[in-house]
Length: 241
Image 1 (cartoon, rainbow, N blue to C red):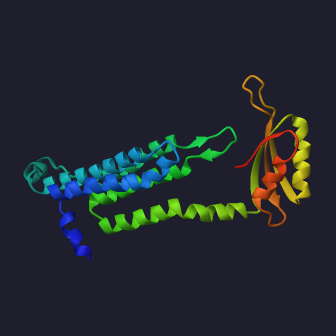
Image 2: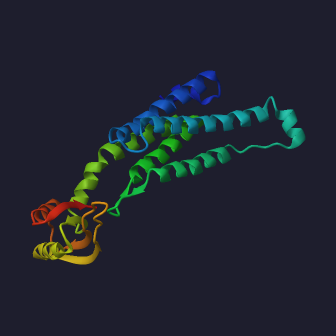
Image 3: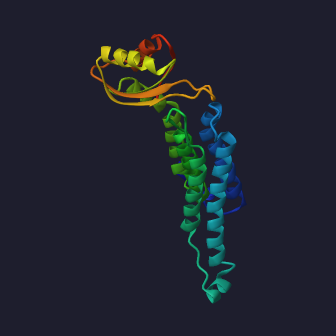
């Protein structure tokens, strides 16, 4: 069955068209979920990164092939050598800068964009594999990345919902309302590890807020804790971070 890929492993015009087209399709498949969520790196970004990675690998293979054939005599005279892996290593380093640009720390000290950055990096690696003609690896990688993005999110949410530790972000009317939040947590037998309070700013219309790091003494659903806190007086917003 895998013999169908053998002709596409050779470096010729047909294989170049196939590899670049496949990288565009695969990059779009990986990025479409991020695009739907309006993340900084969307479908087109993933396509371009994957195509660029494939192009880099193809260029490395082309140079290596030319040095062994057409350019062999000249290369021998000047002692020119090439290492395909050096080009691909630079691609991975370059994608790291793109990924860092998608990671943000919100005003609630919540890190956003890690999944987008990871998917962007994986898209580049898949592009390199396409450029190398390692199609079996590409098929398996795309399948696993798709499973992680679309299905493991529910599994992750289940474990987060039932975890003993949680961080709660609360915005309230004034600092006097902190006691009500603490009493609510204690009534649910939650152990408070740390409280980070911010007095807010009237000029920026930012309300006083706090981040409560707690450990639940019993298996209590996080949603019920959040609902109980939001039911308190003078509470503007409650969220788990």
